[in-house]
Image 1: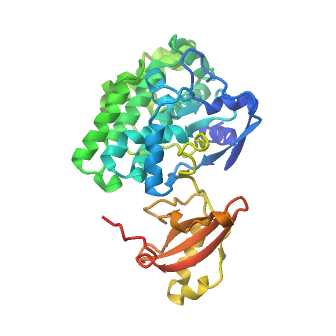
Image 2: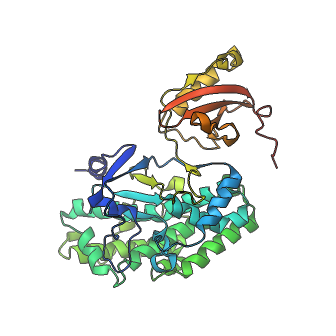
Image 3: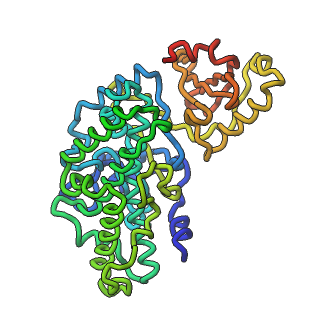
Amino acid sequence: MSIVNLISTIKTINNAVVIPASDSWHLTPPSIGSGSNPAPQNNSLSKTIIDNLESSYRPIIDAEDKASSAICIASDFRPEWGDERRLGTDALAWYASFHRTNYWGIYIPYTGLLRFAYNFLRVTQDPNLAIQLAWDGLLAHESMHYGVDVACAQLEVISNSPIYINGQSSLRSPQGHVPDEEQVAEAAMLRFFKSLKLKNYGLNKAEREEIFNRVVEKSLQAPSGYCDGIKCISPKSFTKHLNSYLYNLGHLGSPSASFVSTNNVLELSGLAPIATSGFYSPSSVNYSECPIHVFDDTPANSGMSNVIHFITQIPHIEEGPGFMDKVVPKYLNQWMRTKELLGNPSYPKNKDNLDFKRWEKEDRPENNTRAWSVRVGKTTNMRAHIDEHIGSQRWVATKFDNADKMGHHKNRK
């Protein structure tokens, strides 16, 4: 069986996922000292519904002042959250292997995303950008774990020998993690932050350097492996370390496998679906087959709830009274195309595409509706406002007009 078919066969989860209580350990950070499985989160949990996202998705935040406040609140450590100094980056997000569970993939809790974003808020002064950086950085780290998982699966198919579980067990530290793998995963994240481009994030050179230095500082405070990521961020050393780690996994996982006798001359790093040459952005990391699970673990009434949203698709949008009167024939095709793209689960809804975002000032709590705004046509200045009827999966387009008239550019810098 080819690796593509192998991964596709394992990946059976789409959109919402219901994880039973017996598997709820996926919803907590891996606990150092507890072995390969994280500690149980809540034995009374009967089921947890989380979102399973495509790799192209990005978080959408609520009003900026609300998001800034949530990020600052999240910076105050709580005992129920993983401690970065004890768990490293995997205190904020983590990866569950398809070698171990049916509920595999990258797990990103809202609290982890907000906590990591705090490192960037003072630099960017923009909560949306801070959260985007946190999201991309965490994916850069966790996608490396997925890359190792896939590389081992390919080695297992080639050699017809089990490798991953035995190999990791042999390399696992007394604290419960695998330092060599965490080093290469942390290096992948640091390589991403080293590669930040002005055109992608709107950051000047000084801001990019400060962000990189902040991430390095946090990394150096983490446990063994994590704190060593800075040692192999250059393309040559990164490839060398990844190759050596995969060879050791194979050698310890299955000493009799045929590739083991090659004395580490095989470029095993090429089996991982991740860039090794040059520095890269998350978009060039091929984790399109890896489920990305996000879940809202923010405490109720904490000031962190209802700040981050992931909208994968809106399959049907009604036009409210008077809406189509504003959509003159000149914009009709663009509006119909916008509806089509909002309904496409694979099309990104971020600023560079539809600029789909929250429009809190038109929320109507008394009617249980939440307002959103979307750009209509890439070359126009027109926008549509859409009401989400919470709990009913009903979306109604209410307004269509020039973005300036709708108040979108009044605070433009």
